[in-house]
Length: 560
Image 1: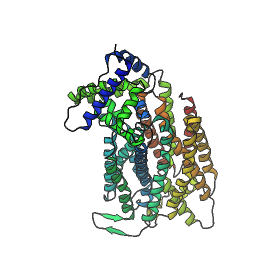
Image 2: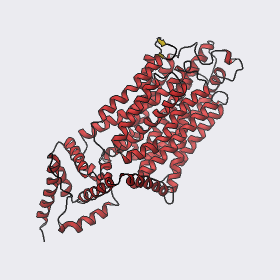
Image 3: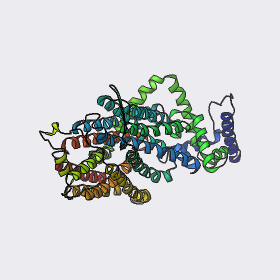
Image 4: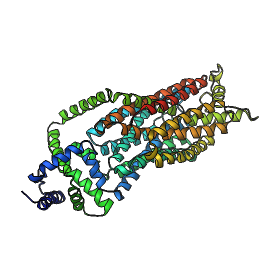
């Protein structure tokens, strides 16, 4: 029998040799890290126990602590989320600013917004598959540059249909950033800090819309124009150009960040996995990576060594047949989706999809249209200097009603400039949204996501009903600010909530499916707004209100 102390030294020796081998250039790495035979049975029992607890990688990440590395990852992930919010916000401001140049009526404006949301529908499957196949880092870098270039080209292409096609691509890329960055961040942050930091991402979503509003206020009212027979460039084109730049800057910085430990473990890249984990520990704790490995081994968690051995074996098999691996990955994803759509997971999956749809539809029914709505209020107030009372429905009906003589008038808004109140009101909305993030951030571990999503949804339903009865632009602004602040937090919280209700091995598939239904809800909401806001606004309000009630009920049915 080998003494336990000697066995511990042997284990430490094997791991240190592995680390040293990785750090020495051109030196061959041992094929596998083996455990002394006297401890194999003990390790197997611990590995079996770990199947019902946190995953091996999860526990390894928790052992790296929380510090400098996590702070850098958190900051870059927040910036990526902020960039996605800017791309989303730009869509709304183009509607009133470019309606004359692109000759857009209400339906064409709705089609333009729907193109972005249609891209968002495709994104969960395209980016979800690629993030599993090529890595979270790879898909984030590609989506950042793809969104940046598509937005940049939107600023110089003078054709409505070409810009709409580019907006579709931008929707795919920006939405891919949104849910992939949540995955990236959750796979790099210890579980203790994860929920609070993920929930706080909503603050940067709000900040991104505030920044888009501030840039719009500074740039779009500028009076300059370059135009020839084939090309034009005005202030809104400059605005779109500037808003595309953060994607390039953030993408360039993100190149220097590592892949997530969980993905490296799934891929079987054991050398990179250990390098990333030890690098995390060294930056967070300020100690040697060898001490980190020893810490894991001395705690008795030898399953990480078995994990490294297994993943390296899997990696060699996958590399031998890349096409087979791709097919296996697709079949595995379809199998997982089939599993979550069967008992006992079907109930949670069904109501999670209902909640995702019923939250996103009311949000996007009005969100992309906010700049247009505020512009309509400005036009209405300028025509009624006597202080006539109005709400969102009366304004839309009067300003954009089906008037047989309207085609002879300024149907595309070419004779008016976009009002500054459009941007200022959006800034107010961003400012009001920020405090709504704090209760969920600090109390989510105590009260749970269900409480906040259900209560915020019911409150939002009451607020949107109030929009129908108020009679001034200021009252509308106050209610809309409160409405979007609560509903925006609901949507961000729902993403984290859906990730928690599915088993670990099915989590990616569950999030992909709910994200898809969320984007379908966005398309539906934007579409009903397009066709109802002018002449049937009351039906729009009723549809939004009823969907929020459904969202609250379905959320309460879900079992955590």
